[in-house]
Image 1 (cartoon, rainbow, N blue to C red):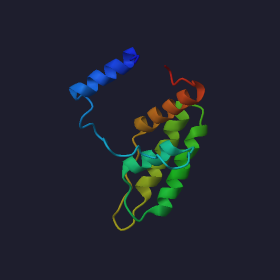
Image 2 (image 1 turned 90 degrees about the vertical axis):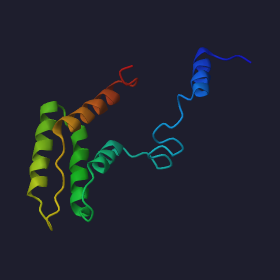
Image 3 (image 1 turned 90 degrees about the horizontal axis):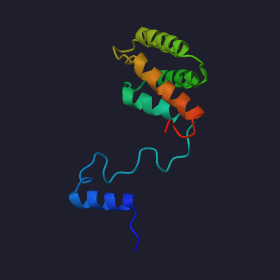
Length: 125
């Protein structure tokens, strides 16, 4: 049986145990089994930001606002939109529970990655 160069390296790494105990091992891929969501990155970003429970109305409004970043044409416009959103988040104060503001640089980096993926079918490879 023919074994390609890649297959051989993977087999050897498995034999050495290089893939044992990796984070997420044995768990399904996040989002697998769900239909495609055009704003998947927004939802995952919001989940990582760990919003306080019971803030579904704010969550939905913020999710919609972040989703609108996709259509912005410049980094400066994205930065300004996130800064305005952070100002709104700072103004929210119910029961002492506050939403965490977004890291502007993280959002800009995610926006740039999406723009690259949208314009470069090979993702810059």
